[in-house]
Amino acid sequence: MMNKNTDFDVVIVGAGMVGATLACGLALKMPQLKIAVVDAFAPKLDWDENSFDIRVSAITRASQKLFRSIGAWENITRQRVSPYRDMFVWDAGGNGELHFDSADMGESDLGHIIENRVIVKALNQRMHDIENITLFCPAQLQKMEFNETQVVLTLSDQSRLTAKLIVGADGTQSWVRGQADIAVKGWDFDQAALVTTVKTEKYHQDTAWQRFLATGPLAFLPLAEGYSSIVWSTSPEEAKRLMLLSAGEFAAELEQAFDCKLGKVESVAERAVFPLRLFETLHYIQPRLALVGDAAHTIHPLAGQGVNLGLADTASLIAVIHSAISARKDIGSVAVLRQYERWRRADNRSMLVAMDGLKRLFGSELVAVKSIRNAGLNMVNQLTPLKNLIMQQAMGTTAID
Ligand SMILES: Cc1cc2nc3c(=O)[nH]c(=O)nc-3n(C[C@H](O)[C@H](O)[C@H](O)COP(=O)(O)OP(=O)(O)OC[C@H]3O[C@@H](n4cnc5c(N)ncnc54)[C@H](O)[C@@H]3O)c2cc1C
Image (tube, rainbow, N blue to C red; front, side):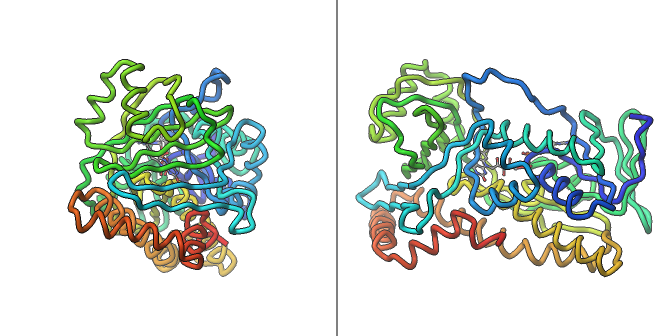
């Protein structure tokens, strides 16, 4: 590490799906830029191919296009992806249902369910291939300081990285955000997501299924060979109880909660619980600093949009930096970074508010609310233009084109 050049144009903290995509996008579009990427952990690049990653993401068509543009999509598909062609949403508290079919949009699929480790591995290989990216992984961050022209980052081995701009892509607990003292505004959520992988008796039909229970949404996302990835959002206490059940007891409860839509749950892999948060930062930027992805905004996974919003952030930031460089402007100046903040805040805010509204609408046991949401679901299902608009939003085709 001591031999590495320590003077950069951009330092990105966090080599997750968002940070790594940003690094590749910036480095390819502007080969004259020197990019450093720092992550506290080295990525896991080997695993048992017979298992599935417990964490998966529904990747929209817009995010797929972005991965393709940085040369990562082929590598992702070479590993393993599962296209989903339909989405079926229904309410446990009534007869409301909503069905989206990619064929109605003249598309072959609505997006892909992809294991997070597959995406991270492809991006990591891409970062290694690109000459103007220098990786510091694993490396521990110690200090972040600013002067008029630079940010100075000190690592725990006392090496120093300087840059014109630092980007915090270090997730929901962002160290960069904390050091910069940027406050977050959150909604009280009190929910956790239990995730696991199951094999069901009936084939999932390449459909992303979601049932709204009073305790929160339960999703079955289609994986290869008839497996499904489960995201069961519920109260933290209920998640804890579900974790303590034997595999057989858990499978029986899952079948019930899912209305036996895919028949018996035949096998259950390891289970894990993630706390769910919903917040956005009061500012996405400061002089010489920008936040992207979960560091800037974290949403409920019910619409499968979290990483897609983060990837849209990267597309915007790349475009803003590119036009600043072309105009010979300082890429760390507030005047430049403000364009990124304005661009992304509006989109991210509307998704955050929509997620909060949906969560409250479907979390209510009030009879009046239940009948409104059932009628609403059925109405949307019959209104083709509105349905198409929602589908475009879900596919991300209104976001990054
Ligand atoms: C249960 C669940 C299901 C989800 N399903 C979906 C879905 O279907 N579709 C979707 O779009 N989104 C989904 N999401 C959201 C999605 O997972 C996140 O939005 C996404 O992972 C955020 O990516 P990121 O790169 O911003 O942050 P992360 O993935 O959190 O990456 C942050 C990176 O920063 C590094 N880091 C952290 N701290 C430091 C530090 N101090 N120093 C250096 N490096 C550091 C980490 O090691 C990591 O590599 C889901 C979330 C949950 C909880």
